[in-house]
Length: 438
Ligand code: ADP
Ligand code: MG
Figure 1 (tube, rainbow, N blue to C red):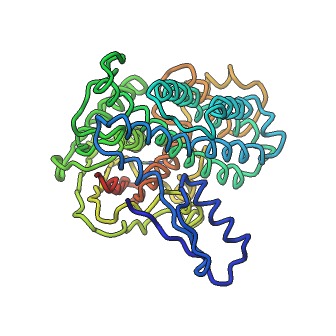
Figure 2 (figure 1 turned 30 degrees about the horizontal axis):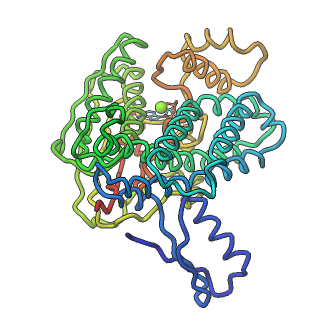
Figure 3 (figure 1 turned 90 degrees about the vertical axis):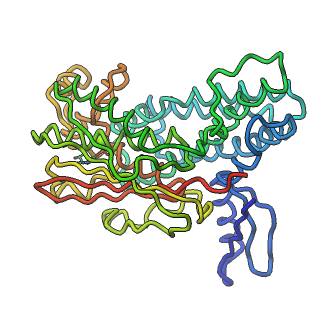
């Protein structure tokens, strides 16, 4: 299993070394060795580890090991999220939406505490633990619109930089925590029926290419097609127009990745491309090009973006590198929707930034917000209430690009946006395959 040796500078103080270790742990890493002379430590990261229990069905021993691994990581990750929420200004935490999320974390942590300092040794315990996990995952399902609403309401009391800083750390940590929990749940369901005939049948059909939530033969073209169909439906509903799309390049490409993550990113990027196409009155199809990368292709060259203000600011959080030799895929989404104007471009990766303002959204707004407020606030709040009423919208939360980038970077990829103002936009989504399948 790959383990990373992290060393600190020779003049690092003990506090700095401790902070580096804490950071590694906060990322879900497990420190396995300490080297005092080089002021370093060895750390295993779960993104590697989640594939090391082997292909399902797992043996009972491997399943218990996975449960214990998950149990080791989750309480500390939840505790860190709680601590970050507590460090927000009091008035922000007091906002009903933010405090609802805080309450969710507190409850989730308290359901795990009885399990702490325990080792899961029997299948009965594992089944009970998995049901606690399933509960936890569903509790945190709807976090994003709620948090978004909370931060829009509090924007008078906290600077946009502080919100961005908090959300970047928080939402990235959340991606990892969910992945760890969902991975064990998936392994459980694809394993238990094989050695425990009395267990309830697996809830989803088994795919031989799946290892938990990871698909070792994921087809980006298939995901693009199904997401584009969904986005086209949304467009038809919202604008009465159904843009066309074309998938070219090498549509037969498959790679190892988490389908849920790819679906999220592709849907968000396609929504932006479809919206621009419709709003600019273009009838040109959106062209999605799938380009596989050979193993060991090296780091992505995404120098076009991010905008200068963001450069390097949030890089520390992704779990990487995984396996530099894992083949990756680049997906280019090209629209002829008029591009992005130079005054908008620097903001597109900021949370809550949107240029979406539909009349129907203003209608929703007039019912939701009685007091004044900027246009952006109105738009964001309007769409949030539309979102929480179950309607799917083409845009408006302003979370699509920053969150997609967080997902892409999680396994070492990235997103670059190249706008040809007056013509159209190219978005390059570079994904690194999840490495090391044992
Ligand atoms: P939202 O879609 O909710 O507005 P996003 O984060 O997805 O939030 O995008 C932020 C903004 O970036 C959009 O409001 C839009 O102005 C701009 N944008 C993103 N993609 C494109 C595109 N393909 N063409 C034109 N503008 C775009
Ligand atoms: Mg969007």
